[in-house]
Length: 99
Image 1 (cartoon, rainbow, N blue to C red):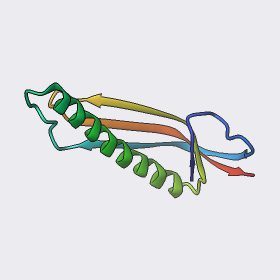
Image 2 (cartoon, helix red, strand yellow; image 1 turned 90 degrees about the vertical axis):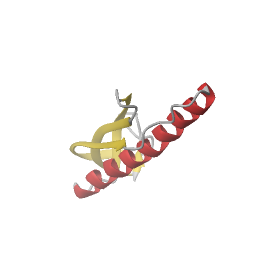
Image 3 (tube, rainbow, N blue to C red; image 1 turned 90 degrees about the horizontal axis):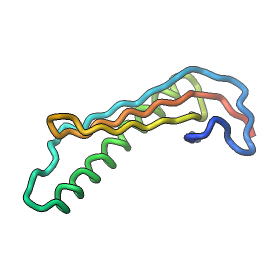
């Protein structure tokens, strides 16, 4: 599956717009709250990376349910909740493309 933040894919033609798809994930492990700022930032980065991957997997699963082979116009939103959880929301348009 092709995933892109752009509204088109070079060398491909969009032949059908199938709908908006999303993927949302929350990392339920609290971030490390130690004395070291570098440890905290590493914890945040790792948490966001894992959570973002889960959100993208969900986005692709939702696109496949619509028989899409690509998602265009992807927007990624990352939030750290007040309880120190990482939340990632990914939204895009599921499409059918041909080369």
